[in-house]
Image 1 (cartoon, one colour):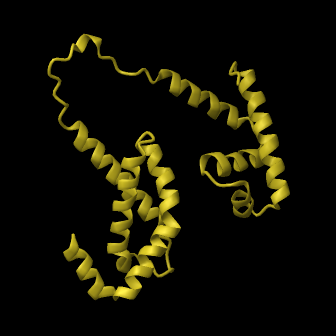
Image 2 (cartoon, helix red, strand yellow):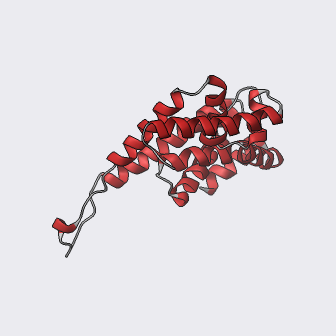
Length: 183
């Protein structure tokens, strides 16, 4: 791995290299980690490894991708992270683990039907909310932004954003209760 880093130093210059690595990490590590955590079912160690590998690939290819600010690298990085996660999953499931001395009749697979039904119910309830409420919940809960960050992203005053989060959650709670989900 050192040879790739050494080659990168000669191409980009050592001072620019450090700045580029810092810039990639500061701009993309947190959003990538949130995204990858979903892909790996919350396994933080695996997610951090995938993000690290993704950012390393971004650094290696930055000169080809225009990382000097002309083009956003985020879509490319998300695609790379997703592919790394898929490749890891495929390699792990390519050969099943050997089970010596295990009573296979007592081993069971978790039933994901409850999780799927909850997800469908929440999605259905979200669709009943107004567009501004949907946007605010998407920004704060699904994209993991603070209310202040969501307000900035949506171009809203902070007070309006706080109010929308409050009323959106109330509306969502009500919609879920109508569907038989209690808190």
